[in-house]
Image 1 (cartoon, protein in one colour):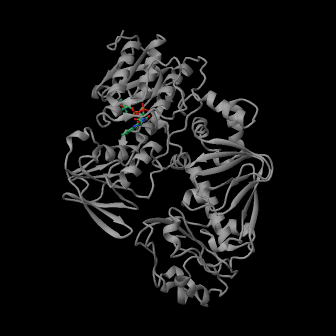
Image 2: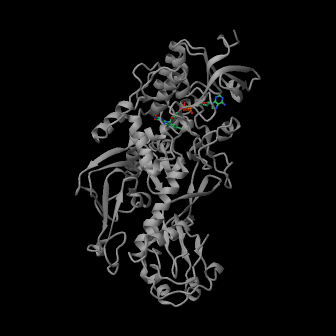
Image 3: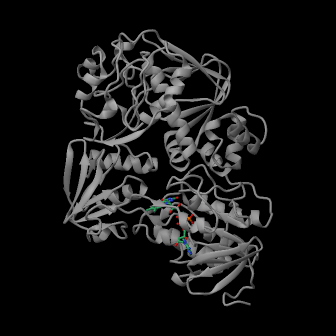
Length: 616
Ligand SMILES: Cc1cc2nc3c(=O)[nH]c(=O)nc-3n(C[C@H](O)[C@H](O)[C@H](O)COP(=O)(O)OP(=O)(O)OC[C@H]3O[C@@H](n4cnc5c(N)ncnc54)[C@H](O)[C@@H]3O)c2cc1C
């Protein structure tokens, strides 16, 4: 027997006592398996850190908890949830050790014989290790003034604050909940680097919109934190720098996975992106046999997913059959779309058919499809109507669709409007391809009408799910970016340029992000000099500002005179390509903010010299 009271080696050693780790511990305890849960803080530390009386939401509403789950969870105040888990942990007989001495510093060995080094110096042995580490590396600012005492990263008790000027930075759930809890008794502002709240639960989004409309919360949009000063925060906005007075600044700018810790174990994230999570198999096993990852550490932001995964991983380790909690939901989605075969078979077919999803893990794909819908459409059925608001990405699993961008309503066209634009553009997309991404990413209205050409099954994925996936998977982001650039150029250039040429051009694109006021290029920039220009270049966007370029014979003479600034859009991405005889400009994050200054120049005028473009 060991100091922990159980026989070593443990069959399952669990690192992290959040919902995922506690669920794994409780299930192991119920099954009488030698186990231990090691938590360096308190039981469910992250929930302990929530603000007092916070309503803990039980989303997604249509995802059940496993029926015989040993821990209970229902929506309610933080205190009630913590109590339920404390009671459940005790009732199950989970072997938990909490406090700094139980921090796991290193894991050595291999499946069947791991040695686990604790901060207190003790070493434990285990056959399998479950890492339920969460995402506890809080992102912090390192700009000037970031160490001033009024700059904080947590809010424990909103009731402690009254008649204060409080600025919350960040518009995820944590930031929104802090702002809402404080706004009744304080002057509260919220700083948003964009204009919307795509990462927050829709319920929180609605509440914040209401609080802003009721002037309970001041909303700073397109705002970047520049520095902190005594009792103030300075943000860059489209109107220039703004000084917001603040007795307290609460920064809720997310957290990162414990990448360094995992790398030391040989578990690398899926990409170099700081938000990327490590890949796992369908049974949550990492690339290191015998080490399993569950919960927020593999990108699951919600408690219910974490609780289910903790329960499932123990069953997988014990080789017991377990149907994932989302299986019935996915089964009925596929059945409704009249797709025969098992859930696993259909998920595999999605990965095989749609390259966009080929790189994501099966666990991520399950989650993504669970948030999506499968649309079955018959020939002639309109899937997207031109000039409607975008809220989703569409990927074709089966069938074929036609995209039509007519010029008949060019005058009213909010995207490509130009009475001289030329012939309407129509093209087909087939299984494996996707559409809707241009509007989704740029927040513009749909530029074309999409109609089913054959009986088709289309994956409809809501904006929030796509944005989350793009954050976690660099391949998904690159594929969407590439498609965006290609289609943007395609539209700018008209139909006379062959696809292959546009494709080649798109591949040379470099995406850069500029802040409001940043100079995109300046007079005399040597990269612009000496390029001959053709006078047939067509201008989009702001004609008054841009027309001289198209009318002049030489870029060298005219282009450098323009100082293009991100005057209204705080952050926009721009790709300037080696378009022959002109410049293709693609602006990604916030088109609307940018388009009245530069939309695109040079609808493909073949010349033998190439403008190499900024950043190229
Ligand atoms: C402010 C806020 C509000 C939220 N609100 C909701 C909500 O309403 N509903 C919802 O479903 N979700 C909500 N979430 C998300 C939810 O908290 C997470 O999904 C959940 O906590 C993740 O569970 P987990 O077990 O994977 O990780 P965590 O809860 O992060 O637990 C990981 C644990 O591992 C411990 N640990 C890490 N490394 C080590 C180590 N080396 N040794 C020992 N211990 C270690 C940490 O101390 C931590 O306690 C919210 C999150 C935040 C930040």
